[in-house]
Image (tube, one colour):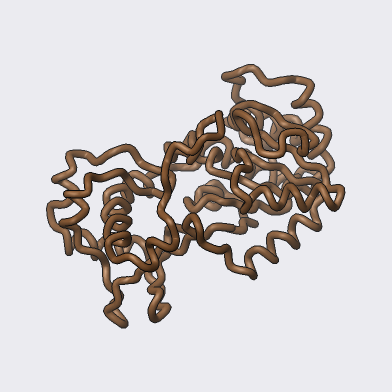
Length: 296
């Protein structure tokens, strides 16, 4: 395989935890010839300070915002926006980690053709990846559900700051950031919060351009993801337990088509035994090694 650029030495880091060498060898053999489509989950961004929904045991640790509640309930939107406003500064400050950079390097080397991500943080693009399909959207944009007016998330943050003076200061630093970019707040605090309104139609149903739990991924996005997977030589799943059908369906599709699947994540995965390879290790211990081995 041809190499299209030098490999930064910063990616060749020593392992921090043991890696099953036999499984790593199988992984290396699977992706060596390129044509890889990567599917990433929340575990991809935990090293950037954005926690995932589930622990290594697969149990959900965080109850996310539900699509139905956001769309139909003014109180639900108030709670979401109060929490999102409080967490945005920390969320937006998150930087790509070594795993994001390694995926971008694998793309540069010609190993990875596309990245399909379930994450909404934009860290793959910030790490340098060029071909990224955001399955669940991005928190960087907001759309009015009533008139369709798009707005940049940073602008909405400014509106919220003006409408809620002293709110952040009253939180004394806020709480731990959650996977959706929000923080947990007391209901008494939420009830004082003023939600954003659309500048065009004055409606209060401004929604970040993400697929909340219970929502539906747009058909054109799903079709494009299927097209990418169908054309892959292999599927590499990173940082996902595959508990959610949104990602697991691509593994099932590969199984039917005879496309091999490799998973790198900590803990068990749904459909254990379906992937051809499962490396139970930290992404930061595996992906830089792939870059070094494939770029050498």
